[in-house]
Image (cartoon, rainbow, N blue to C red; front, side, top):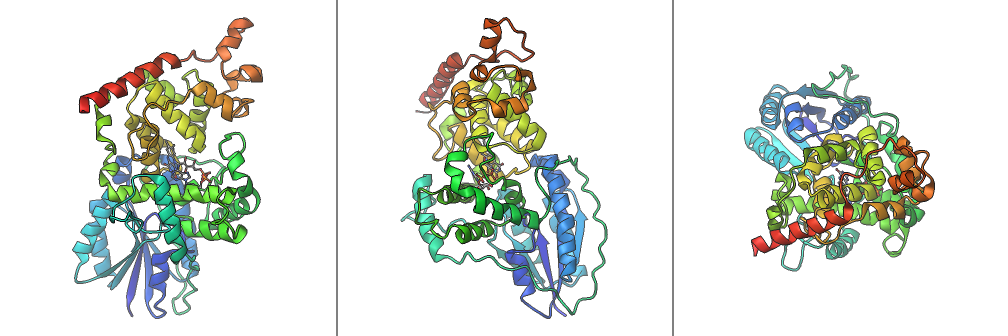
Length: 476
Ligand SMILES: Cc1cc2nc3c(=O)[nH]c(=O)nc-3n(C[C@H](O)[C@H](O)[C@H](O)COP(=O)(O)OP(=O)(O)OC[C@H]3O[C@@H](n4cnc5c(N)ncnc54)[C@H](O)[C@@H]3O)c2cc1C
């Protein structure tokens, strides 16, 4: 009997999984699956212990879902990608694997690993790789010259026109394989990696993720444009942790959106289109890391920005990490991140701007810290977000665009509901003063157990503009 092996990586689902589906198309084949944990590699990639836990929990769900279909999931742990290639080669030999199926990952180390594997098993195992984690594969949306777009809006235009021609149907979960005996489920050993509790905010499992998607597209997406920037409103889908580890596919998102809002592509001023736009940003950043692999190595897209003389300010960096900068919206956001592993998009933009443009600290520090905390940590989106905020990326905010953290708070958390939820020291401060609590405390002679601002925004703004301009001049 032919043996097909499905290698799961960041596609931890049985529904709409292209590699799994393709392997199961052969009704006679024996199908086995594998997941390889690589803790040393994860450490190098700064994977958050919470994300490791989320993966571990989903692996258990996956193991059961596969077993119900007659597919055993093998689990192995080794140090890094190089070790995983060597182990997989031996495993294929021992299990007499003829074909190996996997979904592509686009980050540079992952791509190099897959090239090494294909070379290692060449001649004995046929490898079949699938574009699964994106709506359109990298390299398929290009300018007239065949190059990747550097600017988002024309990319989106070209992307949407290609999307209508492409096959983006979701595939069903594989049928139960009647000819296979009952699969014994062996408990999975926890990863040899710090694992942190993820709380109750994100239910575990594909079904939970799909239910959340359905609910969002039915009940909330219409209001997306008016709610998406308000951190106190829960106006976004909160699906990013599932998308990041592949519990949900972008095709499932698109198809559910189309089912609930059939006019999504025509009604460009609708909430549904606004949400689709965010899914296209996700695609944009993944296409970018393939076109410019240096982004995976944390190099700036705009090389001149490497001439910026960043401040070495460990205390300020620590205050930012802990949510003790004295700027209420920044502190509330960082505490949300530290406690839940998730942060609202508007707040990610505000805290990134604050670290880079107020504290003048190298954006890579922020990028790294985010990865170490985020449940939805994703190299392409995180790097893209940081390089956007730091003005070092393609189609980034211009360097002279500097958010004022106080007015950002006033605009997007006017009554301070979000701030009060995360910064209890400010619970007595009235709404109208919540964004400048020390001014209030001084006026009414109140004692506040809350840090003074670590930096004066007006002065910081001037210093940052000067630092970026000097860097630009040095590169001319
Ligand atoms: C500095 C910074 C760092 C970021 N780091 C990450 C990260 O590590 N992982 C991550 O998934 N997103 C990251 N983002 C993008 C964005 O903030 C999150 O995807 C979003 O907040 C997730 O919440 P949601 O699922 O409710 O999003 P929704 O608004 O419901 O959007 C739907 C989906 O679209 C995708 N998406 C939305 N906005 C973006 C965006 N700007 N860029 C790329 N994809 C997007 C996500 O997959 C998201 O789940 C970052 C943004 C910034 C500014």
